[in-house]
Amino acid sequence: MKRNGWIATAAVAVIAMVLIWFAVSPAEASVLDGKSAVVHKGDSCGCCNVYVGYAEKTMAVQVLNNGEAIKNQYNIPTDLRSCHTTVVDGYFVEGHMPLEAIEKLVTEKPDIAGIALAGMPYGSPGMPGAKQGPFIVYAVNKDGTYQEYMRI
Image (cartoon, rainbow, N blue to C red):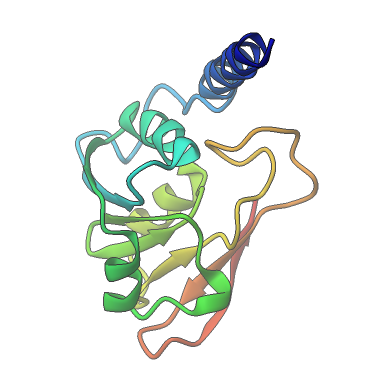
């Protein structure tokens, strides 16, 4: 019985990941087309793997398993950290960031270190569940201070 319960749980998780994958598909054309990104994550993070699939629909993605090292390198504030960090065009992108915010970042090219979507909000790319209010994206300055960048 325990084995059947585990198999059912695994099957539900796989189905949820597939549904999330299609629910957060990026638009057909994007300023990110042709860009390359490096996603730094933990070895076994399932939601990070779903996020990588989401990002790969628009950018060429390389995955490295060194999540904490990159957060420290970019001086990402502790209260804005999430489970993975993406580097694109010299900026860090922390967390389950919608491509809309990354597009704005690489188009506007602000004088900041990167952007962050703190935690792992429901309904964000790679995360299950329904969105529960706006995603607040923060711009992180090179000195580690931050302010609201946009709401999605």
